Amino acid sequence: QVQLVESGGGLVQPGGSLRLSCTASGKIFSINIMGWYRQAPGRQRELVAITTQGDNTNYADSMKGRVTISRDNTKNTVYLQMINLKPEDTGVYYCYLDAKVAVGLSGRYWGQGTQVTVSS
Image 1 (tube, rainbow, N blue to C red):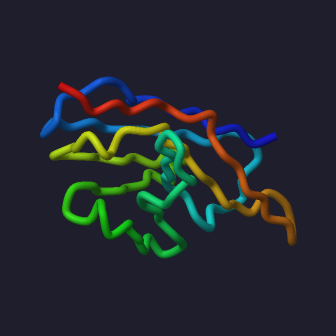
Image 2: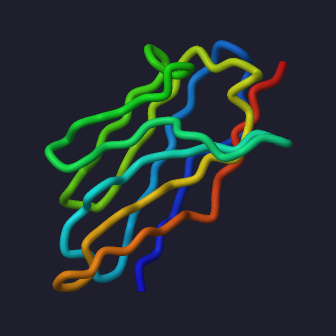
């Protein structure tokens, strides 16, 4: 059973920074995609940033220049460094994993979410 454990959310003032972490555990052969989505109140879940095989990255336009995603493959951990946070960045941030978990089998998993609140 694959599990994702997130940490690093919290309350921060506008212009502040946060670093989120997500560690995957369980039987993982290889990671296809690992990254972050977020969901603001009353809105659909949306992409923040992901890393793919070959360490390619993809960022939401609204977050470009303010976030950096990185991954430690030895720890099955992905990090999201966010700077210059704005009130509209408030939401629940979810870790996402698409990984090969057995021969010929891939699975998709979500973390439980971590709250990020940007407010003065």
